[in-house]
Length: 128
Image 1 (cartoon, one colour):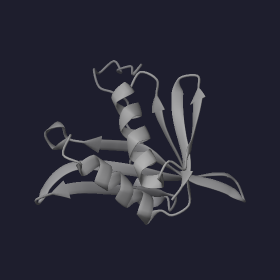
Image 2 (cartoon, rainbow, N blue to C red; image 1 turned 45 degrees about the vertical axis):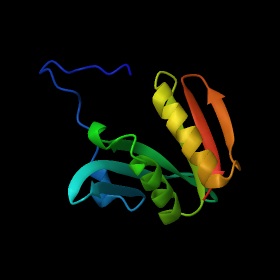
Image 3 (cartoon, helix red, strand yellow; image 1 turned 45 degrees about the horizontal axis):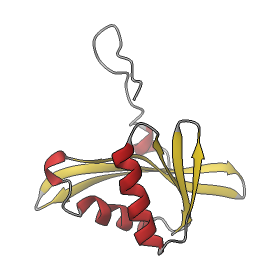
Image 4 (cartoon, rainbow, N blue to C red; image 1 turned 90 degrees about the vertical axis):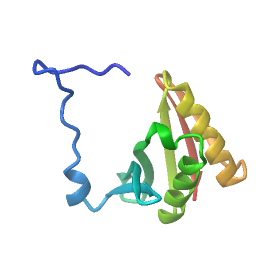
């Protein structure tokens, strides 16, 4: 990812406050055996009055909890919590994420999704 640091050596602030004040944003902490294992940030994006979809803004599972099936289960739970159209995208340089999301969405939908390839990213489109 082409992230830039500020003069103080830190990354710019992420707009997390909106997840507690905007009714179209949904923050989730993931826990396993009473330990924090990651988080998910979901956004409802409105293109216009009659066209909206859910999107994963951030999805993070701590390294020690990866490859356990937790991420796949959390993704499916999130899709079930937010019924409707979805667009989940991954940047081109994040091949592990592309593999994870395509496999997870294919399993969740029984293969009933489409995939768009755009400059800089891949997007899976489906309805939960």
